Image (tube, rainbow, N blue to C red; front, top):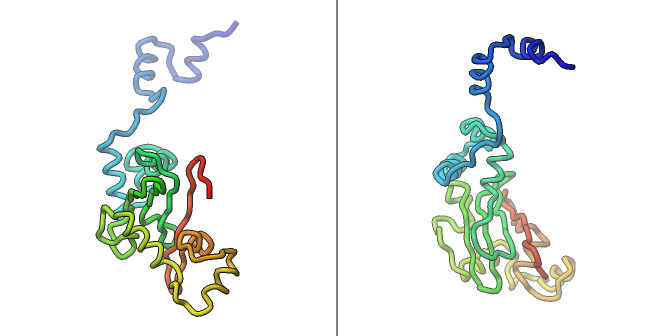
Length: 187
């Protein structure tokens, strides 16, 4: 049989019931509170201003993984694809795409408009999205266009598929695109 008084003395330095209750009250146990919408807005602002995930996590007293989970939540709606417009290793703009409804939603992760997918435009249209895709790939009129398309496995000019093959990289540019597909995405 265990001597619990002795165990309490070993673990907590006391066997006094009131002191043990006080120690238990100071201990954080159970699940941490979820971050609020205001917290999430502040996290996004901090990230946009250049703070790292680790710095933000330290400010809120949570793990880096918790901050990443909140930052990577997809917006409400039925989105088939997410494109991350990157600068080096940093996501500058998240682009959520609904091909059936021909709509997009963006979340800018930087205040630097030169690194954003749509610059100052916070509410791009489907046409803006199509122009963005075309701007990130070779021009349709490029010499030997059909030869280049065949080399990357395409029969015809399709800006989205070209970007998938090239990751949206252009000459002398540190920006590129990561592609993430939703459930049931058929391409």
